[in-house]
Amino acid sequence: MIKRMLQTAGFAGMGAALVLTLIQAIWVSPLILQAETYEQAASAGHSDPHEAGEHHHEDAGWAPEDGWQRVTSTAAANLVVGVAFGLVLAGAISLRPPRKLSTGVLWGLAGYAVFVLAPSAGLPPELPGTQAADLHARQLWWVGTAIATAIGLVLIAFAPKAWLKVAGVVLLAVPHLIGSPQLASPEMLAPAALHHEFVIATFMADASFWVTLGLLCTVFSRRAATSGLFKSPQQEYA
Image (cartoon, rainbow, N blue to C red; front, side):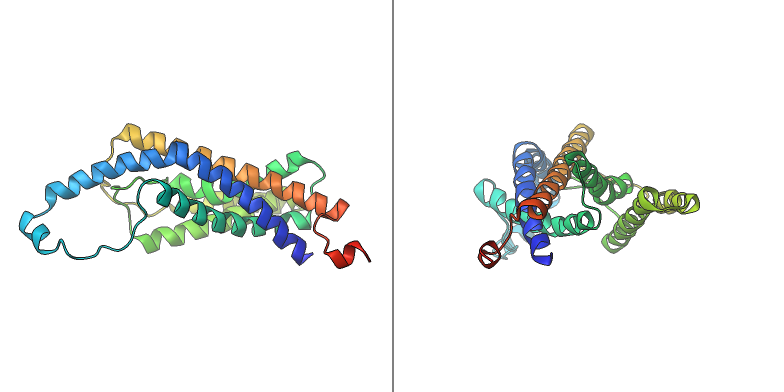
């Protein structure tokens, strides 16, 4: 079973990562590149020419260039994330195997709610050049929100008693009642319209990723259970 889960997560993660990378390359990355021009212009405007001349030899570290390097590095990161989330989803699906592909979509949407929608309600996606609160505080709130949302959805969907379902609803609300870490007066270099489009593009890309991941995890797990898709050669001829 563990081997089947790993293989399901691998295949599903690769497929979802491919979808995410394509949408990011077409829609999300161009918006990030636009925002970086505003960030670079602001940095150039505040830089001291003498200091720039003195420190031009310092190495700022490697970063992927625009084009194939950026796409390749993004695809590699998406693959790691896709397989990791695929393991989480494959493990959850194995506990309650879905009978329909539509159930796989629901599993994907649940993952989308836990890891994207709920945290983004307090900490929306940010373009380069956007000031934000302390990173450690934001990470703690993000992790706490994801955990609370996951437990809350499980209680609402599967708890046998009504008071447990109510507790699930409370858990969904608690992180947002506490509130996410925010700056008193945040600043953003990119225009508001660009930021708005970036948020929409990011939400759509992540939604496509999670729906694809839920569907593929369901497809591969069902095939493994019914037709022995991932049987080893020894099992095939036993």
